[in-house]
Image (cartoon, rainbow over all chains, first blue to last red; front, side):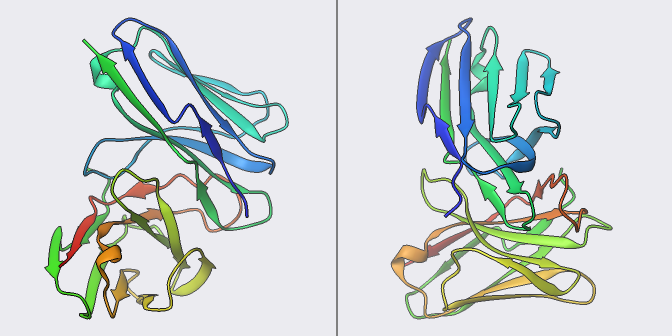
Length: 111
Length: 115
């Protein structure tokens, strides 16, 4: 079974703190996406990383794809209450069509 | 607004019944994915269709089936419903049909409650 493990599962921090969420697999991914989901709504795409070692920035969010394309991280600087939500990594392993979602990280940022 | 529509938004039914969930992908997208999300759980991939044909299958129960029609809309049929089938069901679409960047755009979901 192909798995995308995310850590931590839960994170509760104060506004202004920094945090990093990790997404790991033993499989190689042709590309990897990060999504944010709010309660009762569908996930919303944040970013796609494709090249090993790639770093992408989206305002206070920094995404990195591992050199071997097996892992990724999401770093949030100076977290705000609006960052609260479920963060999901997802991707398709090379040579397949099956789209796999990570186990999810539930973030709560307290004002 | 992702451009993906799902109906109905809410569905309440009894055990043993059958329901049909409907999804219209973004204009031009050929692939449709179905997911199940139980309370406070992650997304479980059910099935993918590409241009009318089944492309990949995940943890879909035999009581569940899906199809994609020539106009590319898709339906997910859930039969002999059990209490444990209560969940949010999401549909997503993507335009990429080959291995590559699979950015998915999600609909608002259908909340199914089985009583």
